[in-house]
Amino acid sequence: MKELLSKFVFLLIVLVAFNACFFIGVDYDGNQNALLCYVFFHIAYLLVLFTGLYVTRRRLQVLNSRLYLISFFYLVVTIITCTVFLSLTFSRETVSIVYIIELCLYTIVFHYCFLVNKKTEKLLLKELSCSSKITNLIADLRRLKISIVDSEKKNLVDSMMLEIQGCPAMSNSAVYEIDNELQMQINKMKIEIDKMQIDELSELKEQILINVKKRGEILKYGYVKA
Image (cartoon, rainbow, N blue to C red; front, side, top):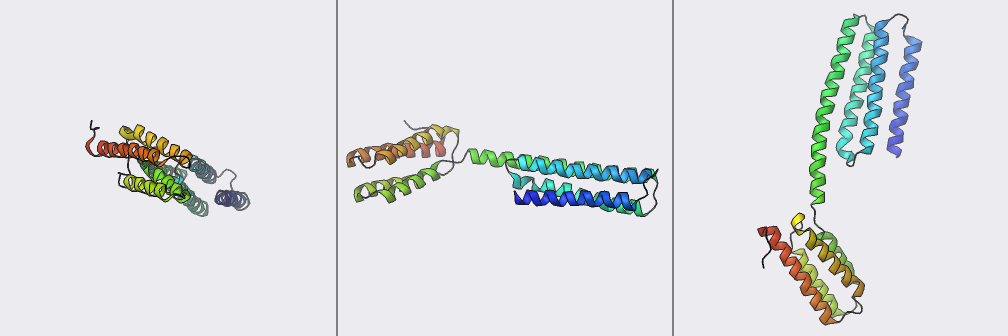
């Protein structure tokens, strides 16, 4: 929030400074080049604001920060171009062509980066959506082990954790139901561990290991052995 506020204040200072310099130091009466400079500066300024708003709404902002940098760079180039055109004499056609070329180049680069970022974001989100719950299951078992007093139960939980750690960490839709079943079994163990007998815990361990083995076979061979 502080970073966003600081950027907004900086951009506001740039807007105020440009308008103050323009209306105080530029003879804009009947000067079409001056009006073109004024219009294209505000176009660049609005594009920076739009990009900033777009970046803050994206799920992976770090990928889209480059878009903000491109828009800000375009604003800086526009300010430099305005300074040159307001200091020297150029034809209206030259001024128009230069500004249009700059805007077209900005549009091409921005659109290219947008497509690259969109593709990268899609791949990352797909990878995250396919990630396994195994890490969470191991973390649950590790916390459960710390809370257990009975050494025999602690050893059973420890052996479960070792077996699950040996299972592939990645996942896919084929093992989605098995992951959910493993989570439910471990949740049950977390709730009932204190009143469970060793035989009950051993039986639950066997069920968990069957699911872990089945899961590994699906990921390795693509089918469930009977």
